[in-house]
Image 1 (cartoon, rainbow, N blue to C red):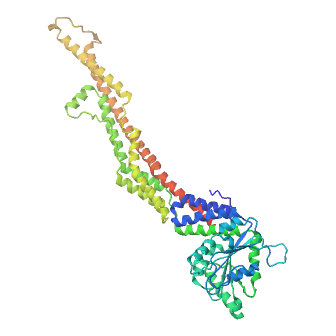
Image 2 (image 1 turned 30 degrees about the vertical axis):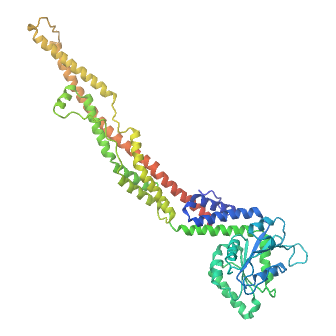
Image 3 (image 1 turned 180 degrees about the horizontal axis):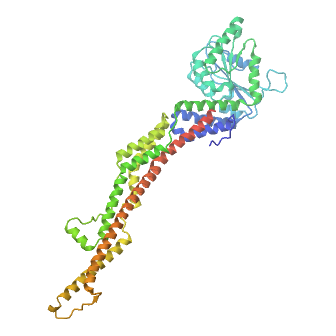
Length: 526
């Protein structure tokens, strides 16, 4: 069950926590650059909140000659940023700050040089309370600069500012570099993006609407259908108030920081999802587990081993409980009972167990693709190497192959020897009585019911031995059947337990790790 409370909207802390859980569960399953990107984004979000949530960083970005520096000066109502016409002249970002208290650490984090920081305590009003207080307006270097350092500064700050204002001009508003490198990557940042069409004073009125329509179509194709487009002229001031209103709204509601971080989190979550591909894992429990246990049990030959154990038990029981004379006769005939101490320690056919476990891994991976499928299959492959030795050790430790010697064997064996001695004693006594005339002493010949006690002892000893032999045979056969069933059950339980501990549990843990990862990712994308 999801640990998140059920509601329509995911809060920003929940979204960031979900992304952090994504990294915890599966960072090693992501491309290194993507994992580093998500981790850096999480670090930035924490740093940004710690620096200042009372300031809103608004960046003006654009190409050479788009007029963004002129627009920067108009909004600040000061000649701050140097304006260039032909060559890019902005080498470092320039910042104008409304409300400087506590802003220095933020400007340091943005890496705005001290010499390019200007305080502006009042703008576009006449001394009244300034509703732009908290604005940090940044003029970015030209993104199409011939200087690599300028482009690197733009790329860095694009990831840090709270509100993007992209300044385009009628000549370059369809520039592929701007759309492909920047605008198209901001489909998840629409709440913190504004697009400006500057220099409309250079167009006939009839062409302004056409340019705006064309730009709107391009932005829609970029996935920015909710981004506002403002037509203005920094030279004449037309439309500037509309842009300032957008900025003022972002500053006064103090939501741009969170909206920017949320947009970043959602974009990174989508990148992670795109890297995974479609598919779902299988279920390691249930049918796949049962099939694996059955295959390994069959490969081990548990039934054959159990039957061997039963035969060995029967042979040992007959050796211990049959009449000693019968044992001697059997030995003389070459059919003496086996002296085996039990079935041999079974070995697991590695090829069959490997194939079964790898098939189990494929089933557990389901329709997943990429690193997660590979990790689940690799986990199964690793367990396949460990399984035969683990099962053989478990069988050895169980003692199932050690032949038991029940106490009743010893009792019957002792009585058998007693019956044999009785029969021999009686026989010798009878012979002595029959040959008394040749002996130098008298042999007593007591009788019981008219029969000589000596003959009763001889015949009784033989009868007891035969009867005990038959009783022992019946008991031995029953014990052999029980031994067969016991060994088969013990081996089956050992196989099942070893399969669970060595194979199913690690593979299921990897599948569970993926499910945790996926739930967190879905929450981060929500």
